[in-house]
Amino acid sequence: MIADRHPVVLHGLSHLLDAHRGFNVVACCGDGASCIEALRNLTPDIAILDASMSGVSWLEILAIVNSEGLSTRLVFFTASDEESELVLAAAADGYSIIPKDVTAEVLVQSLHQVVEGQLLLPLPSSVQAVSPEQNAIREKALTTLTERERQIMRLVSEGLSNKEIGRRLNITDGTIKVHLHHIFQKLEISNRTELATFAISRSDRAGPPEDRPPLPSWSD
Image 1 (cartoon, rainbow, N blue to C red):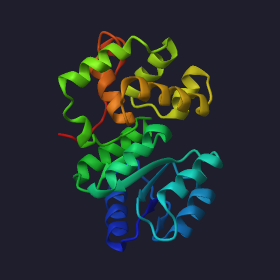
Image 2: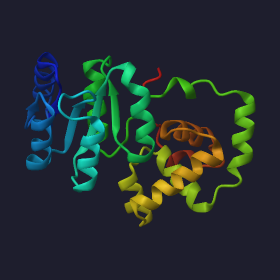
Image 3: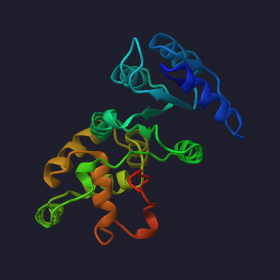
């Protein structure tokens, strides 16, 4: 399903995906009401969503999907000025974000990754440069993490959503959010992507390299 307030974006994305094998566009929505209706009635595998839909906010869409237990994987198609707030919210809720300036090839590849269960998040500017002092603080704080918190940190670095982590560890979504909150506080980290980046950099602390696929990011 594609939902965007701009008709040209709807047409372009629909045409692009129709041209690629493995994708079937079941709905194109130009406003919030039709977007919610399609999510509820069609339950698509993936919903590509404009973060600034008319008639409904991305927070409301997220709340509906979570509260009603819909299985659709949400992908917010965003401009750079929307990125920061979305990434911070994704720290607890686990959805994917794809910038609008990616190439068609990257977009299609990214959607395939989402289907496979990966979580795609842009790398905020705040995590691209970490001072040696901040790294030292995190290294020391790492020793205070519990075994469960280490497990969750490792799974976040693999790109798993909260629901997928819950299934893997047999714990509830609420419990995962509590653990993430504690991890963020201990490591002085503000979002999920920053945590994943740190976990991947700690190959000797966060698990064997072969167990941790690279975190998809758009910093390059």
